[in-house]
Length: 321
Image 1 (cartoon, rainbow, N blue to C red):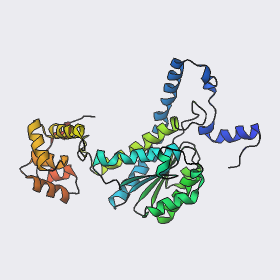
Image 2 (cartoon, rainbow, N blue to C red; image 1 turned 90 degrees about the vertical axis):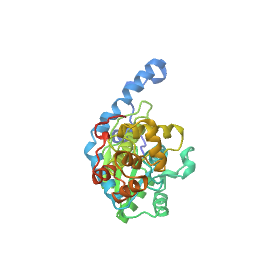
Image 3 (cartoon, rainbow, N blue to C red; image 1 turned 60 degrees about the vertical axis):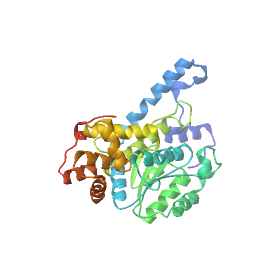
Image 4 (cartoon, helix red, strand yellow; image 1 turned 180 degrees about the horizontal axis):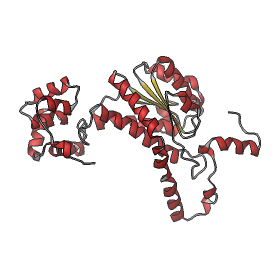
């Protein structure tokens, strides 16, 4: 896109990029009181989930593609620059503790490398070949899914990565916050969450960043649900890496089975802390080793393992957040 040389050119350019447009409502932002600013930002933020909801069919298609790839042994790879890249890394980093998966299953890639997570790396996002190199280094395969993230929808680093992913045969998603974006057109699925002008012009860490986080939460969380990492609405593959999570593991077994804390703790100890196996062991006559074996035979899907063992579970009527 050509850079504007006159004010009329600038207005024409901003008319095509809503993330860079100026909000008429907040032209006197610096004159507002703190309370007015809080109310204004809150009102702006409320627009985000509405914009995300408009993309439900596209988000659904993206999740279906990601799940299909994961069932064939593929990974989910997020690619972005700046705030968008950090959103991908944030989402990826929560998968191992929440769902007990390897850090290699969901990966975040950011222009400029690890240094860019905390510090801006100048011009990194303008290098399309660097996006290709990052995916090449990861050994991208056709079974993988690549989600390119860019508020503007025209970041060269992300576009280069997505183009390479399509060459490899990977499933691709372009997530942007502008309609009719190059990124939206570049993916097998284009998710364009048009949140409109930011309260501070062009500061896409605000509404655009919030929209990206909501969509990425949906993609990864729902993919894990579809892959059997959740039972009812309980985190049954969570890794208990601290006292808080060990207590949550115990509560999860109690909620799923109705046993007391002592029984839940014994089952968790016997199964090495694997919540699924502890539930299966508690709901059946299986010992720890047999519970682990049956789960493994059923791909870790607790509901299938319970059915095979002829057991029911209270998690079917349990609804906790």
